[in-house]
Length: 100
Length: 167
Image (cartoon, rainbow over all chains, first blue to last red; front, top):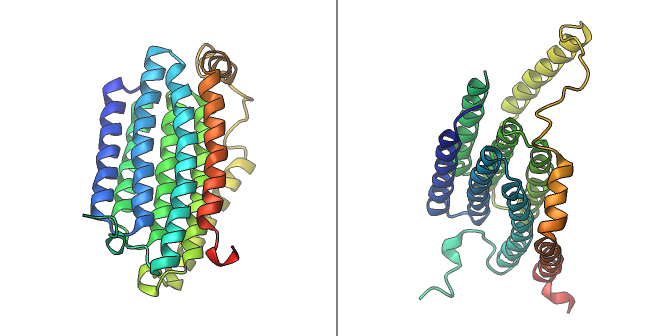
């Protein structure tokens, strides 16, 4: 089995890719996907710790993260649909009403 | 061997993660995200927790991705945002994939892999029964709260995405 640090480094790389994607993209849908990537990176390190410490708490946390991510995707995509009805676009640069 | 599999899965995950970020087309990004999620499920299997790996496939690669694709289709984006109209690529890809699946089926039918029955994997760890004990005894209240959260999310999503003209 690969050492724990390998999993943690992979998790860090995936999180960084997710952050890069959120900052780079203007399409709200792809930004959401990158947020999913970041959540999955966190899940990976939780699972790695859970497996190496032989403790199930990490797996329970992954379970909770999955449920919260599913809720977040449902609400977030509903917001995107609602924005699309108003603006006819999913470009986040067009949604700057609350920007100061 | 385990290290080789780890590096293959890690490489697949990082490359498809980069593809998710760099694709202009949302559908391509969603499909690469499926690849990344599946590779992550493979890593979970390697870490010895089959239940969470199955959950990863069902929830992320299944449900969440279907939701994403539905919304992408629903939004009916403009051609340049939606793009990617190459029939040749689709045909080629389908033919290659079909050939691979046919080859795999032939391998199985020819008895190349002798069937050994289900193998036990690390009996003291990765068991769904032990996970459920932890989940339903020590973490019972968080579990219930998460279920309420999911209910709230369903209602919120329906209200948010509803057409205003129906009121």
